[in-house]
Amino acid sequence: MKFSLRTKTIFLIVIIAIIFSATGIIVSSIFINRIIDDIYRNKADEIAHTVAVVIDGEQMAVLKDSLLKIYNNTENRVTSEEWGSPEFNEYIARFSGLEETAEFQHILGQLRSIQDVNDVDCIYLSVIDAPSEGFLYLIDAALEDPCPPGCLDPVYEENRELLTNPERGFPPYITNTDPYGWLVTAGAPVYDSNHNVVGYAMVDISMDALRSQQRNFTITLSILLLILTIIICAGSIFAVSRFIIRPVNMLSNAAEHYTAGNETREIDTLRIKTGDEIQSLYNSIKQMIHDINGYIDNLMKTSQELTQTRIKADQMDELAHKDALTGVGSKLAYDNQMKELTDEIRQGNPVFGIVMIDLNNLKCLNDTYGHEKGNLAIIKICSMVCEVFSHSPVYRIGGDEFVVILKGRDYENVQELIQQFEQNMAQLEGRPWEKVSAAVGYALYEGEDNADEVFRKADHMMYENKKEMKGLN
Image 1 (cartoon, one colour):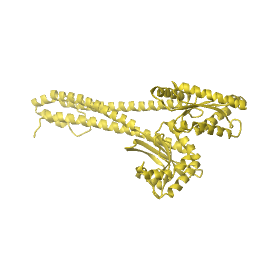
Image 2: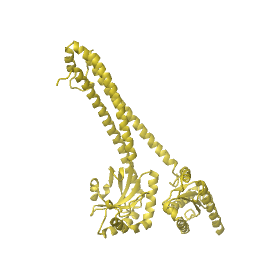
Image 3: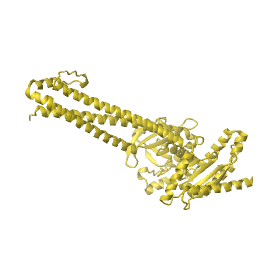
Image 4: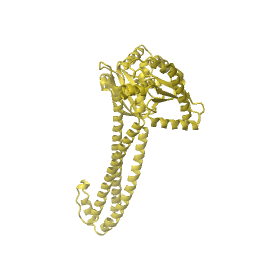
């Protein structure tokens, strides 16, 4: 079948436009995806190494020994693929005692504090049993559906090297599974005092929202390039019809000239100055290439600027919501939480409570021993609050005032936890800024109109407790 020169020319123009458009879409999408993936991998790796440094390796070693003792004495081991089955529940029940140990609760509190500060989906500690090639969960700080101690997974193929080289850890890798979606995972080794690897600090960060944004970006880019391609094709076809086809019909040598100018060379190295239709076509194609490259360059520059802006905004937001001295929530974070609780009250019947803690004799400590010792007292009492109320957010709302928003397990056991807190204070020994005390009061939500009313009840109970403590003194 023979085709006219006009048909062949139009077909060539369309093919070139499609190739350049498709190349622009593919190259820009791959390049941007690679940059973003690297950012998330680095973030996961940095957090994992931070957790590995913060966690007490000796405490983790104690938990690991207890875990492996139970694991090695268990014949019927059940992996997480049978989650929820009677066999799985029976297997996991063997490890339930680990969650009640002081080491477990202390490390769990640390993990959740780091998890809240860094706004990641899940931080957890794991143990590798090389003989069975098993990946065992030790402590999972996830707030929803955490993997219990002893939960067993096989070691993935990309991580098998750590069976013989435990210090390798888990280099960041990205997975996409049905239950968890897109995740970037990284793990760093945790060492004991003898510099032996006792386990791994693992971090999971969800990338589902990011992948959705990337898809939207690709669709938008495709539409823009499609429009640009249509415009360029229409202009080129018009130019070909006006400046090539008609002269070719009149002069037979125009086609030969066009063929001679269409040599297989790089488009930018051509120097066509024939002053006829071929030069016009060459200029149009060259301009199209430059337009697409310029668009991609501008798009990449804009993407990088947006990424830097988002990182700076995240850093500023983190600093504003975290108390600089203690690391717990700031007054601003507390005010935002109270607004959210008030909104929940208006929408339904939420379950929460508020604990008010006021450090005693801070002014006396500052006047007698200096503000540095006063700060140590504040940090000491804050650490005790976080340790006891490990399942609830803690905020510092004043120089010596702390607030706990009771949730879940802490809400259900508030009286026992307050007794535990008071017992812990009574057992403190040492110098005045180490042997701290505080007045405590709490109130549970009972149909108040807003969260501030619950706070005032807790504050009143705290002052009543402070009066009793002064009376005893």
